[in-house]
Image (cartoon, rainbow, N blue to C red; front, side, top):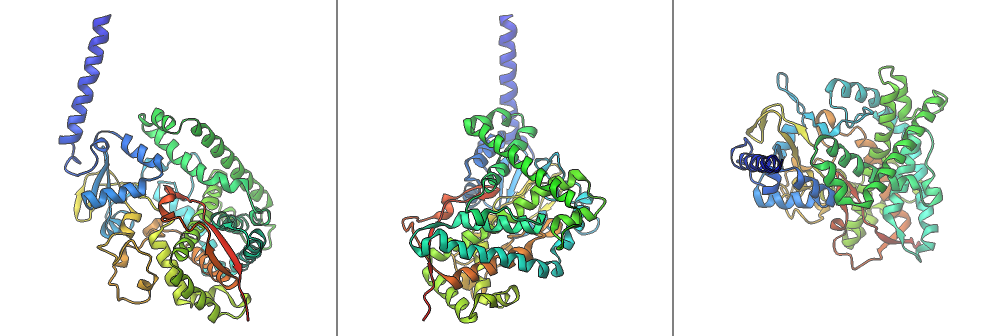
Length: 485
């Protein structure tokens, strides 16, 4: 018996050593550089993603190893505009498509996770009317309603500039209420209450869902991920379950309301399409809540941080807003679209702090990426954060420089700017997001002078953690009511 046990141990050891040798020296991806641990195991990527520093580590790896980095036994990461186009862009006739990896599979099919291109196209078509130009005009009044409420509440929460306000929370409450009304016909009440327990659940739920999916597909992770997180793992699972339950309850309530709403909301467009069944509706309820609130809030707070760290840019933008508009009522979507400096600030904020920061994995069908043939079955991705700060594409790449968007003087290659992705999976809500950002920043700066409370914070960006979406650090700001002559 002892001999059998010993033989088993020796056999397993020999297999593991042989597998490591194969992966390191003979695997089709062995020619690509990267961490040795990543070449032989998914443990490196799991640990990196769980740390919240994955996008920063990927940026360091690409600067060290180059455009193609091996980040798993069968995974490659790219960081060029050409690779981004090849992986995520529209595929020409006759060529195979890059499908979303198995990491995206969910029990409830939703537009952001469904892998089948045909099913995705059906869901996208059902939602497209909700994001049309006509729909955007109808939605603008709702956006103004909650932006105006936030501007009012900032004065109350901050006691007229005497107390700091956590701007991270304020922007999350704003976008959460907006998407609640636009998607389901009623707000979540976050701005009115100055808090909302559901807002706090969302990001932990996204993180848990991503890591849990890795556990489902990779046996190694089934023990490693809970080990890394310890007791917090069970708490995250409880938050995930509660978030799913609340979203489904919200969806079912909206389904029961049918066509009774005077204004068509996002969910109403889905309900009208018979091909979208109840399981799809429930899954897309979660998507609308997360994608419709978290990403825009991230863009707003990231841009606000960079403005506060560069007072001359903040002063220039404030001057543009106050010289253009004489009252809050004049601040509309169309009017703010003509504010060139406001547009430049928003674009630069999206570049240096892209809301969806990490690479989005795809299964390669066997195709050329960045001019190099990659075998079928390899998981590939392109790092948005790394690309948006690559000095080959951007002059003074790590600096916040809004003026780069006002002329061609910088010589930047804006193909590397992809905050809303591209191709058939590009963000449907891009126009709504820009509307919210323009109107919010304009109305806040029209009403308040902003000062950063935590002056000792040198790099708020790196204080945030990235789990695909950002878990944003607090940002304490004093909102001083504007002094008028």
